[in-house]
Image (cartoon, rainbow, N blue to C red; front, side, top):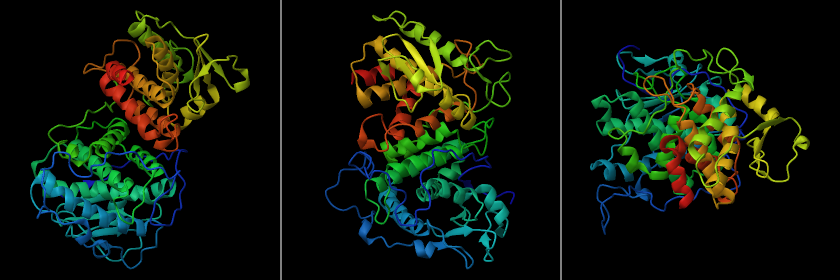
Length: 506
C-alpha cells in the first residue's frame, strides 16, 4: 500500500494491558458504569468564542433535524460477528456527526460536510472488500490489523479492526465499549482536518494526532454531560479512555516529530484532557499552537531496557537502583527548593515495610493506595515494598517515582505551610510531584541540574499509577479522580512549582 494517504489510530505497538482495567463485557448502549456521578463540566458545549447571535445560525443544523446515518455509513460485511459494542458504536457515530454539524461552522466558518465514504469493519472472515487507500484497490486484513484503525482522505472513509485478536477488541474486552467512542471520535477528527484543509498543508503527524485526540476529548465531554442521545458515559468510561490512549502510545525510542509519530501516553492523555476541559475551539488552535511534548527517545548512556534494577543504592553500578535513585534525588531537589523556607525542608529517611503492622507512627499522612506515607511527627516516609515491587514489575521503574514523589510532596506542603485539606491537598501533591519530575527532563544536550534523569516512558509509568488510585468518581471529592490527578500532575510537569503554588493560593 505504498504511496497512500491515511491517518492512523496508532502505529504498531506492544500492548501491555494493565490490571487497572474497568469491567468488561457490557452489552448495552451505555458503556461501563461507575458510581453514576457525572464529571463537573463547563455548561458550554459550543466554542467559547462563537459569535453572539440572537437567532438560529442558518449554517448549523439543529441536532433534532440531523438524521442518524450510522446504519448507512457502517459497512459490517456479511460475516461479521455481533460485538457488545456494536449498538454503542452506532449511537456514538450518530452523535459525532451531530456534534460536528454544530461545531464545524463555528470553528471553520463554512457548512459541515458529513463523511461520504463509509466506515468498514475488518476481520479475517470478511469476503466483501475494504477500499484501498491510495493506489491499491483494497485494504487487506493483514494491513488493517497493523494499523488498528485509520481514516483515508482518498475516498473519505474509515476502517477499523473488528477481529477477535485485534487491538481494539482486546482493548474493549479489558476496558469496555467506551474505547470505541474514543477511537471513532479520534478518527472523525482526521476527517475534520481533511475538510478544513489541514491535511493538505502537511503539518507534522504529531500535531494532527494531538488535534484528533483533543477533538475526541471534546466529544467525550459532550457525551458525559448527557448531550449525546443514546450514549451514556461516566467516570469509569473516562478512565477507560485514558488507559486506552496510554496503550496506543508510540513505542519507546520513537521521535514524536518523525513522520507517523503519535506521542507518548503522557502527550496523548494531555491532548485528550485539553479537549475535554477546554472544548473544540482550543483543539482547532493546536496545529498553529501545539501542546508541549515530552521526550520519548533514550539517552545515549541510558539503560537499554529503560528500567534500573530494584534496590536502594543510588550509586550501584552501572546506573543506580530504584527506588534508591528517586529517594536521593527527591531529597536533593526539595532541599534545594525549600531549604530556605520558614519551615525548611530537611532530608527524609525512607523505611520500607511489607506488613502495615510494622509501621510505627500515630500521624501518618497520605493515601495508602499510593503506597508511600509520611509520618508528620518524625518526617519519616514509610514505603510499601509489596505494592512497589508489583508496580515495578507491571508498569516499570518510574512507578516508584510517583509513589515516593507523593509522600515527599506532602512534606513539601508542610514546609510551605499549606492550609489545605482533603482533595485539594492531595491534588497539590500530584502537582508538586510533577514539578519534581519536570526538573528531571533532560535539556537538548541530555543534561539535568542533578545526576538523575527520567528515561523515555517514565512519565507514562507515573500516570498509570495515577489511574489506579484516587476517587471512583469526580464528585466523591476525597482523593481526586484519576482524571483530576493526571491533570494536576501534568500541570506540575509542564509549569513547575510556581503553578502548584498558585493552585495552593487559589
